[in-house]
Image 1 (spheres, rainbow, N blue to C red):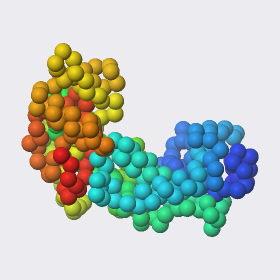
Image 2 (image 1 turned 90 degrees about the horizontal axis):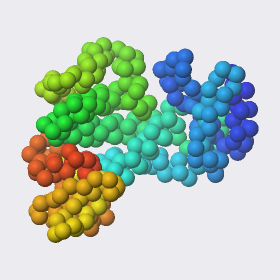
Image 3 (image 1 turned 60 degrees about the vertical axis):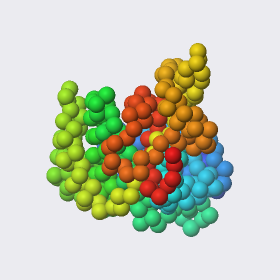
Length: 324
């Protein structure tokens, strides 16, 4: 596959009025024999919202289209700290931010194929994307850690998985700050190798093994996560925010309040908990409870019960945010 052939394939699929960027594991140096070539095309109107897989000779090309307007919006979102103000309090906010950071990372870490200096060249400065990605991982690491602690008693195997994810996310923070800002969990071992962090790579592998044990050792995770938090030296003013998960509704049956999700299953609520849920249903953001110090493990039992049953979404925000 030559550059000229690749450009011709993109011209045939997208037209000449665009900018094209090559990104992904190949440009980052993480690729293997099964890797495809990720090509992002920015134009005034996207040809399709779905990625196209193009096979040229033995090369697999994953072609993704973006409009300039939507890409500019994503870049502005990615440049904002993920927990400024309301932060990632609801699943919708979190998903919007994740997609924005991912798009910004892929475009900024990409190799321009053509279109540099044109109106479609909408990449951000690398340091802006790096800071945005690090902030997202920082919030996500705390979200996963809080979830692991809350699930430890009721669902220890699930909690072990969340501890492993939190450990990985804290490593992502540190790796991103040191220049490994390509966004995505699966390339963390390669990032650690490139940085020469052999001890952290060994800890990553140990954490994966620990997460699969029949009887997880949660203290093992805690002992390894705390030093990572200290290495980051970040502001700890985070809160844990619980909002109603997508598909949750509240109904009355035979004088009892029932909470259901997608009408597939239901749980009875006490009168006190029913009142909290009723207020959350009436809120636009669906927030049921804000725990103002994410390190404080004394979360109300009713909140833990609903979260463990997958009726609540856990987000993070700054302590200054005032939910219920």
